[in-house]
Amino acid sequence: MVDSSLLMQAASWTPEQKALYTTLAEQLVRRNPRGRRLVAIEGRDGVGKTRFADALQVAFARAGVEAFRASADDFHRPQAFRYRQGRDSPKGYYEDAFDTELLDRVLLHPFRMGGSTGFMTRAFDLHADRAVEMEWETAGPDAVLIVDGVFLQRPSLAGKWHAVIFLEADDRVRGERMRARDGAHPDVQHASHRRYREAHDLYERTVRPRGKALAIVDNSDWRWPKQVFADSC
Image (cartoon, rainbow, N blue to C red; front, side, top):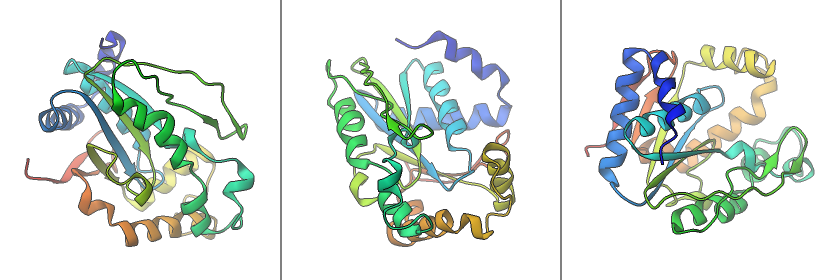
């Protein structure tokens, strides 16, 4: 059943937002009209993944499709494991920050199975650096799970998604968003961003996620998102 409260959120959308979110939801449904579907929203830090994924959930609700939300940020590993290659290691961030096995085991795989199998949309509290109490959810036979995060097409997650939307944004915009959100330095080329910047460089160089995405969206201005690439379906 679609959450009716989601429908009200579309009232604040600009015409450009409404057009893009609606088009993407329709395209995703057309590609996989029935069953459980997994959609990934990925991109570098500060591109607006969470807000975009939330909006896409609303678009699915407006189309009469039950949609669930999750974030890879809620599947981090404990700090001791995350920093085992050093606090400043880009390779360590890429390889050790996220528990992709847990993400697949308690969320992606059970969701895709369908039926009455339960799934968890959250497993770890990053700020408290501890696992959270298990809360299992269920869904109907025709539902969508939208997951936002980084590195979502990495080898351990390859082939898990029905569709991937890759977001981009101007570096200046990303920096300002991270400054407002986390108090980070607004220049994404600053040394304090090196661990994350070079981890993304490594991921994009080895995986080439843009070429595998259903759509690439310029999200520099969240009020006027622009689709810059889509497959031919």
